[in-house]
Length: 382
Ligand code: SF4
Image (tube, rainbow, N blue to C red; front, side, top):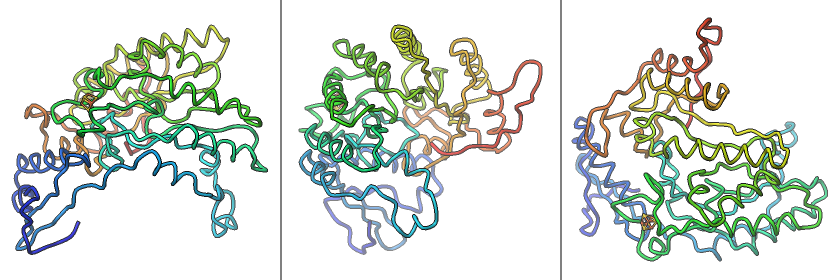
C-alpha cells in the first residue's frame, strides 16, 4: 500500500475512510470488495480516499508456480536455531518444526475466522513430490535425526495436490466457495498424490515414521469416494502420533454456518471411521478437537448445546476451547464489528463483554453438580 494524491483510473474505489468509520454498511461493502479482490488472476487494485489523498493497494502478486516453490524449498536451510538464540538455551518450539516438511501453500477452506485465504491465498500450490522427497532424504542424513519426520503438510494437510483446473486458469469463482457449504465437484478431491507421497517418504532409509501434524479437512476425506478410506486407514495405521487434530470449531448449525464450517454430520461420520480403523489396527489413538467460544452469532445456549454434544457423543471435555479473537481481514471480524451476518444482512448477537466470553468458555467445563472448573483463563487466537 502507498499514499497518493492521484486517483488511478483502473483501480476500484472502495468507500472512503470517513464513510466507513461511522457507517457499518459501508464498512461491510468495503470489506467485501477487498475480499473479492484477493485472487491474483482476477483481482484489481483498490483505492480508498483518506482526507485529500488516496490509500492505494496494488493487486496481489501472482501465485508461485510449483517450480518456484520447489526452488525456495530446495535452498540449503540450516534447520538450526540462530547461534544468537542457541547460546540463550533450548528453544522447544524448534523440536516440532525442525524435521517437518512443507508440502504446499494456500487453503481453499475459507473458514470465516481465518485470514489465511487473504495472506496465503485460496489457491493451493503444491511442491513436486521429487522436491519433497529430496528434502526428506536430506533430513534423513542429518547427524541428529532420529528417524521421525514430524509433519508433512501446509495450512491444511490433505489439500496437497488437490486443486481446481478452472480456478488455476480463470481465478476462483466469485459466486461460490470451493468446499463450503458443500464440496464443489470441480475440485475433484482425490487423496492419491498425498498417499503416494507419504509412502515414498516412509520408504526412505533412516525414516522410521512420517507424521501428519497439520490440521485436516475431514469433510474432504469423506467426499473422496475413491481414496478417502484408504487415506484415512494409512493415516491411522502409520502417520498419527497418538492424537489427530481436527477443527470442527462448533456444532450448532447456526454457528457453523457463520464460521463457514462443515455440518456436524461429517464429524460424526469421520469419527466413526477413525475409531473403526483404530480398532482394526489395535491402536489407542484419539482425535483432538479445536472449538471456538463466543464467535459472532454464538450465544450461551449454543455453548450448552456444544457441551452436551461433546459429552454425549464425543465422550470427552475438549481442552482446546479458544475464545474468538477478532483478527484483521476476516469475515468473522467483520461480523464482530458490524453485528450483521454479511451474507444475508441480518442482525446477529455478538458477545463483546469479557464476562460473557468467559461464561461461554467456562460453561463447557461445568458439571451439573459443581462448578469446580470455573475460572479457566481465556485463551485467545483463531
Ligand atoms: S469451480 Fe468450484 S472448485 Fe473451482 S474455483 Fe469455483 S467453487 Fe472452487
